[in-house]
Image (cartoon, rainbow, N blue to C red; front, side, top):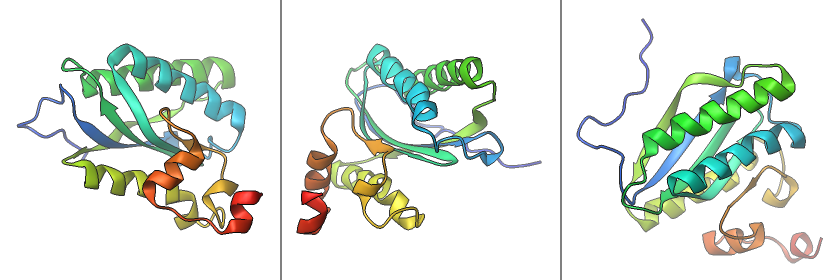
Amino acid sequence: MPEYPRHLATFDYVGVFAYFLTFCTFERSRLFIAADFVAIVHEQFLRVGRVHGFQIDAYCYMPDHLHLVVTAQRSDSDLKQFVTTAKQSAGFCFKRAIGQRLWQRYGYERVLRNEAEKIGFMRYVVENPLRGELVESPLDYPFWGSSTCSREELLEYLGIVLSDSRRAG
């Protein structure tokens, strides 16, 4: 029997905390390669984030998975409710529009303990297309960003330096 990710037994996932999240597409299908497919999903994560009090500090839609760094904004923000509702809403809208199942059942989460760890995971998210050898510069990949700032502001905040020619282009 396969081992599925488990939540921390001694942590209730409610309150003002930051998290790193990963969700894979069903059967690792390469669904996040078209802007309209990404837009359907991203709209739902933003909407549900507003309802449940989560901001998306960094996101990256890789072809077959999604990485997020999110921060709860309220004392009653519940990560389990946010994840369940966001995945259900995005999956429903995706199935209705595209006719395909979107998500694998389980995802991965990590509670981030401090700002330095959060910044490290945000950097990981933004640089994921580079590690996947999809592009040579973060600016060449269209499906990453933040709900709180521009891509350029996020790169600056994370200390990711681009060459002068990349910034001008």
